Length: 132
Image 1: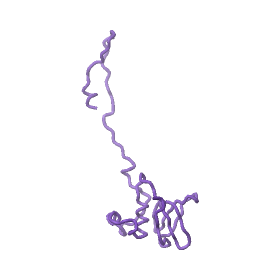
Image 2: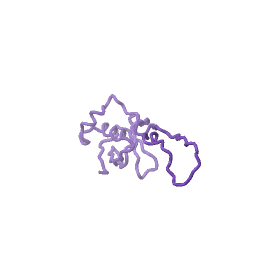
Image 3: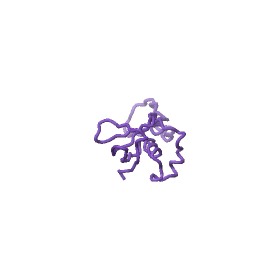
Image 4: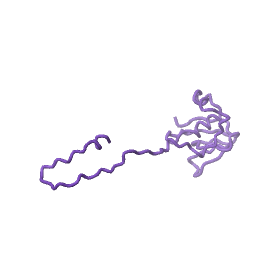
């Protein structure tokens, strides 16, 4: 931008031109945008009193509890690819993407269902990653 503002030289033309006033340059010099990376996801209702982020960073996936695994998948940024999980409950197995965690309910997007499924956290016995 500095080279444009300092360059006040008239254009060099090899044909005869009338003397015209130099055109004023009115360009935008600065730009600032709030990107989607700066905004936190607002749909999450993850309790902070249960788990701190430092506890999740220092553990491997196999060492985490079920609640920690759910919070880990629900709090992933949108630009990180989601990992398919196998959720084993008392009655059934679900394979899908953990989308959110609200009011002790885990919201899962399953490929065979058009709408997300809500499962109570207490019913989940195990969580395994499938898509790696």
